[in-house]
Image (cartoon, rainbow, N blue to C red; front, side, top):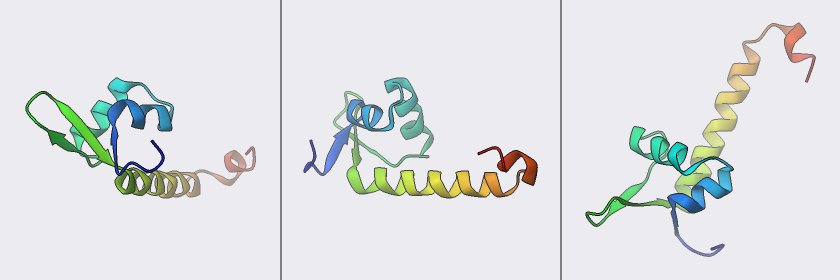
Amino acid sequence: MASERFLTLADVAEILNISSSQTYALVRSGELLGIQIGGRNQWRVERSKLEEYIEHAYQRTAAGLAELPRELTADR
């Protein structure tokens, strides 16, 4: 799996430690870019797109933490 360009939704779910239905929702919403292969609802996510999604998640988290009052962020 480490060298494959495309990942199944099950692979992505395992990497992100989320359910398959959560992964499917991310792809269907466009939040995580994926491609549909064939007509049988077979989705694939390019490894580089998953890495971009993770990087953006870190950025969103940092931005959200920056908006919290200082006394809440000191508890980290």
